[in-house]
Length: 294
Image 1: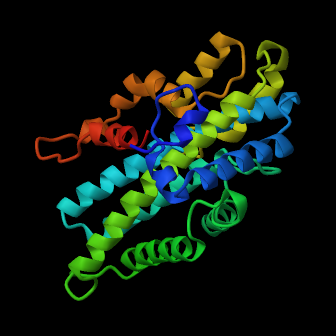
Image 2 (image 1 turned 180 degrees about the horizontal axis):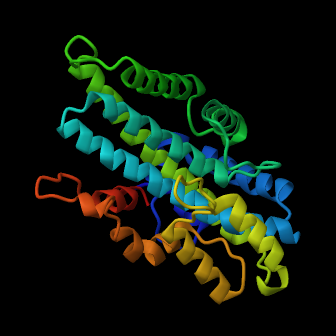
């Protein structure tokens, strides 16, 4: 396999789909040099608040990949069960989470983890569909994102009673093939950026910057919940506790995070108290799809 981007890092990782998109060694070198330069110009890791911010952003980026793969795995279940109202909802959000994973690792001023849908797509295209860091064709990417959004909206608000007459099988299969390809490329792009962040990040101690740590924990992990105040997911609590034990900020490549978090993610079971013998959800499908990309 002609895997050129891998030569920039010491790990045996997989960037084959990015290599294919960039096409030749010259464009690959240009892409990599431009990203390194962009990081150096836009991110000053010597600042304590920047080091802390990227500590959380790098982990959230990996979590977005997990969220994306989870939504994609659930979309496959809804396919098998002919659930028209759910299938494009889950496919659309699998795509959006993959895009947001890349944005978490894209240097920009005043990054907001609550970026809206259209804003996320537009910012992504500004960075990766034009210029020296271009990976995707802008027109194709924009059209595909719009198509998924439109299908999600029509199947949510005007639910077809039958797939017959709504979308023919060839079009459906084409959408599925494109989505799978986009997701894997986006995972690889985010993985690639996680390496750059890990190589340029400067660590700071947590105990000396605990108030800063607390503020960023709230920014990136507090989730609105109807029955709890200040809800933080169990997996995020694990990361927070690991950080406190290490007493240092860090940015790790996805391949390292994936290995560290594998046991935790393998435990994913949705609402396990609703499990029954007829369940068709395969828990390992979530991590195996990520593994396919990395």
